[in-house]
Length: 221
Image 1 (tube, rainbow, N blue to C red):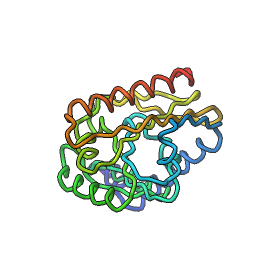
Image 2 (image 1 turned 30 degrees about the vertical axis):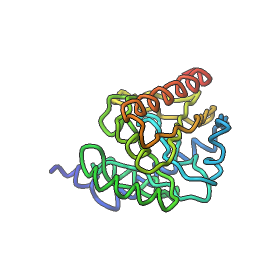
Image 3 (image 1 turned 120 degrees about the horizontal axis):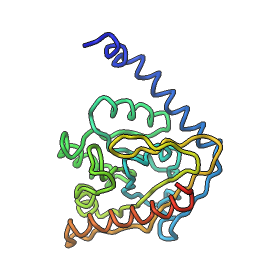
Image 4 (image 1 turned 90 degrees about the vertical axis):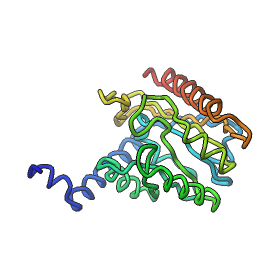
């Protein structure tokens, strides 16, 4: 392992990077004008009166730690690779917790933990297209969690008037200061126990992409 990689893997360096990342998110949040568009049926969840499964695309995760319901702790499903550890530390500065796992590693354990958290009233955040994609294509995992738990899926997206799009697989949106940020929360999606998971998966995917298209249109993205 090179000296550079050893330094980057140092706990002290990882913590410092997480502070910088969290600080930048707060900087962008407070220097942008926020426009929030929340479906009437979703307001009860955004006020923290009920818990839900929050769904957001991998490439639009940056600003969402700063936009969370009060009263209930948010637990975010994050993969167990190196970048996941950094993200986990960064969202910790926003008071959020991590559930470690993904569809390819630690999946069964993560689902079990998620179902327990939902039963106990916590909120859960999941990127249905993470950690490997395809971009903005929902995996079945989120539909299964909704079906088993009886909790609704809440599509959440953001777009920004001042941003850079990265060349990563997820076309990550890096929001910049001094613009406008549009937060959209869609209609809650229930997944009955008798529902077909493929049908539910597609419903979630279509809803999220329609919401994102609307946010991008308003932001000129």
